[in-house]
Length: 312
Image 1: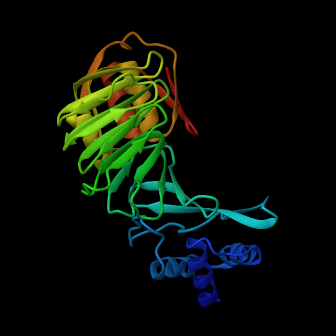
Image 2: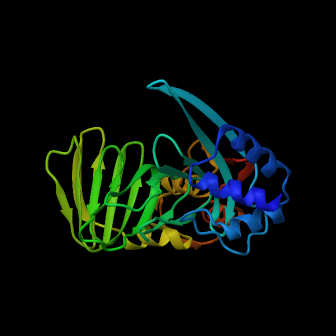
């Protein structure tokens, strides 16, 4: 059984499973033990995803399978989508591999967690809470990722012949080899540069902008304008190391960031200190500890109900 499971897993990674093999693969994963699944993944690691050896919880579960049939030029093609749920040292993320019709893989980081991946060209990407990112599983002449939403820190492998691009839908970033951070929000997109150079453009951006180390560009979706200023090296870089940093931040914005960071909803009806500015750093602290610190400082009470925080 283990040999067959390993062979099917290899064929899945290469997008070569038939319809019957996909059904068999689904059944075998459902029946296999955690130890068997872990051994298969160690022997044939999922491409370009960093998986630590000290995983203590379930390695793979909730395997979902969808076989889609489509007709083109009188022949049948099959596409398979398999969701593999993995626990990493930095948090829970979901990995999707779609064999047809593209070679794009999608990584989605669950709210309240962080993760890291290595792209086929060696570029390292750190992903913040609630981030969705797509990338091509085959290293080639076109190096790019689609940052669908969220925040990612890039350490790009140098390749002068093949620039690296980050696409956000509203703002495109092109680099040769550098370290930078990108945050794609609902109303704006931010890019902070730390080393090297990046060029920013887009369909609705009137003129391309080039950033130097220490600069940040903020693109506002409503008016399609870019503003360039100094970046916040602490805030824009150290989140990937578990630091939640505030510098003269209003309490109401602090609570919003905390909700985003820990993947919880915060109900906040207003407080006399809501506009007070907070400066401070939390490093890998549990949510309860952060809330206790703030409640002692500002005199509010809170209640945790499942994934919701009620501030009183």
